[in-house]
Length: 152
Image (cartoon, rainbow, N blue to C red; front, side):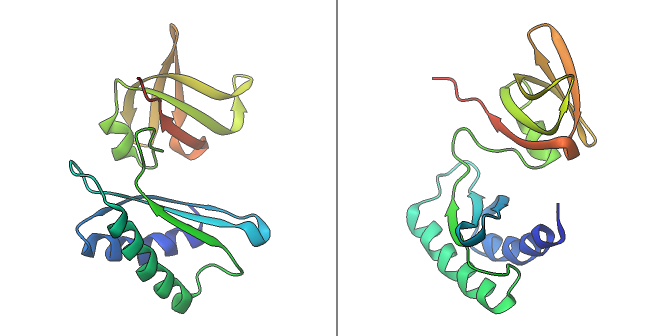
C-alpha cells in the first residue's frame, strides 16, 4: 500500500466502523481528471443498504475535503464488495480458501500475469492457487488484483 492508501485507510476505517460496518477495501485509480476512489464496505451476514452507502459517501466526502489526502479532482463510489468481491488482505483470502479466484499480477510470473484457479491455502503474506493440476505460490505484494469467481 502507498502512503496515500494508508492515510485513506486510517481516516475512513473509523468512520465506517462507527456506522456498524467494516471497511472491506479501498482502491484509487489515478486517471487525471477522471480519477476514481472506490470504497468497499461490508456488514457481515446482513446486507448493506443504499442509504448506508449514501450516508457514508456524504460523510467521507466532507472529511476528505478537509483532510486533502487526494490532490486534484476525483470521483468517489461507496458500495459493497459484491459477490465477486475483490480480496485485499490475508484474512480475506483465508475466508475463501477452497473457492475459485482469478488474479492479475503486477509483473508476469511463469510467463503470465493472469491466473484462475482454486485458492488452496494462505500462509503469512502468500497464497497458493491450484490451476488444473499445478499449484502456484504468490506473495500478496505481487498481486495487482484478485477477485472471487461467482458460480451461478
